[in-house]
Length: 378
Image (cartoon, rainbow, N blue to C red; front, top):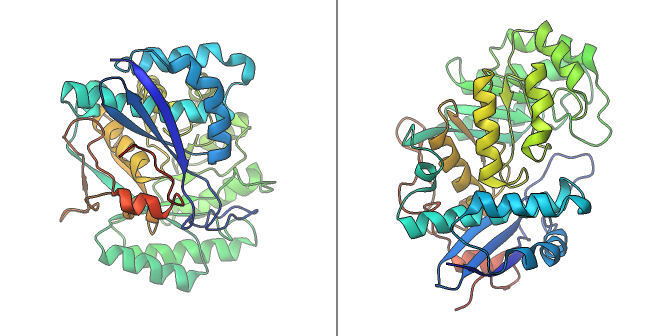
């Protein structure tokens, strides 16, 4: 079975707030869907955390390297793409686009073999996983109300991030965390994401140490991106100074970028994004390496229904991946799937056990966010 074509369409019209200093609008494209078609009529779907203009430019270079290749060898094919595009730059749009291709090839392999992708990645350690509701921080009262609504929907784990945290003063930071803990209750998992990869992030190591001390008293499960994304030495120092687990990694791409962070002991939780890092192939290799060093992989997942489906399959295949990120309130996650995501009575998400990624898209819903552009024929 050979790769016949690769197509891409960007999602617009309902792009959620990012929390970035330079905020995006609903019509900005942050996520692009990928379809890999084969000469035998099987199609795989992928997702890329990049705009469609960048993905289309990358595909102009990547498509000729893929056409005619086996559609049943995702890891080999995407490694070929990494190895033969080094001169275009490692990471960035090329690697992001390879991520979508890789996810789509795993989807094809699962469909052809009749197996869920998680089993092909090494085996299914679990059939369901806990999603954590991922929300942007607001003023304490509004945030508490929002979290209360999510708790009523069945979520039992929550992450609050970005917003004013670390950007005004320590009193507001604590007021936000206090309101969140009160809203979700003492037994829920609560994570705090400072958003240190934001443009021109100013707080440094001393701020992070003081803030971690505050977070300890609220039983925070991890402190995410408390520092800039290019400073592993400060992460090491912070981790040594606090008992709160430290998490990061969403902006790193390619497995090689994670090695110095993991070997230096910078992280308790590593967070590659399958739609950026190089796909499921890279995520799996990062997860296995991290596991040997006592670090858990919990995927970053501020993306699409296809990205969430990929994260669910990855979570089934890694022994320590007990959580997935669920971007609440996103049409690109909630509306474009044919069968809506449903939490069970324990606040868990079932991991699809049907072939491939295990989801079908609602193509009419997809068309609403692609301006009518079609990803598939027919």
